[in-house]
Image 1: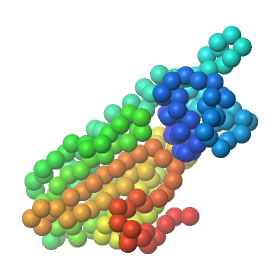
Image 2: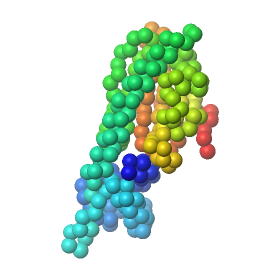
Image 3: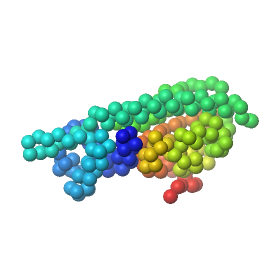
Image 4: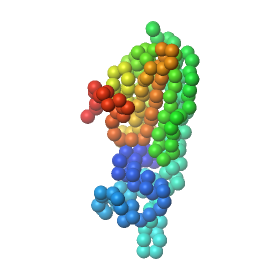
Length: 103
Length: 120
């Protein structure tokens, strides 16, 4: 699941779609405004974001709105938490190595 | 070995970026060796944590970029950029920026710097 998120966000277009939706829910045509992208292409990107669990669909009468899936944010939060703990440990090891090395 | 700061200067949920900087009590050239020479690198940044042992890109003495392994999925990339700058009193300032991203682009503040080796 987490690895799908990295794949989904590796694409710059999908990142900007995701960022737009982070501001608020909207439908596909609203989402397309200001972007040089075709309707089929945006549907495809939304599909990838959905299967990664980053975006979800909400039906509103005849319209379908897309919104950020909170579960996806939890996964990103997990990634951040993991590496926030990881890097300080690596830096401690680096300092130990620097002490050991010849000048 | 003393350090000054370990706090992330920029770190936003939206972008999934981890950024931290730390002042090291060792000259930049020495820190560069610890980062760029694989046998040294292995002792603090083990290959098991990297997607590939070779850097994605590097500017000798200044900056190196590694792709980090994310749960073993080959497509799942995060990129870490490790940059060395002269610190205070002959030490080195180490900047680490780690983000979820696909591209392999060196982001240098100085236009005169060019990556000498880039992965295809």
